[in-house]
Length: 102
Image (tube, rainbow, N blue to C red; front, side, top):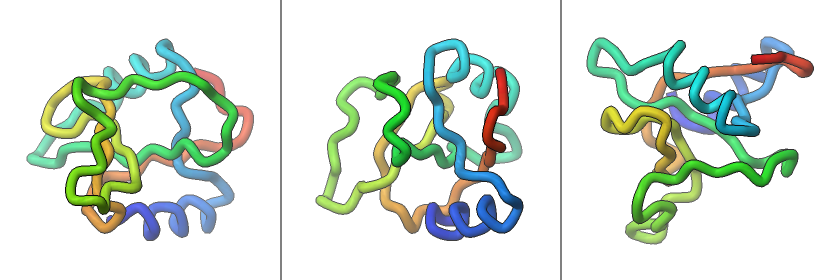
């Protein structure tokens, strides 16, 4: 599902789209939810402003084509690295509840 659909799905469950706040959480997510069955990437969000942590892949974010306004984790098998991509791209979704500890 795309980033907008992912946001709606998470909100309907009383959760929100995963926000990665530090290296430990990023590593845990990458190890616990690796890519499989041809599915690559998981939507993440940075909209709440709670974290200064980033783990962009080399050369990212690059806003290629001027339309990469969303971010994902683990795209193309680069475990734990982030990429900016178009918000309509279809990816897996990870939601989290307030107060979730990793």
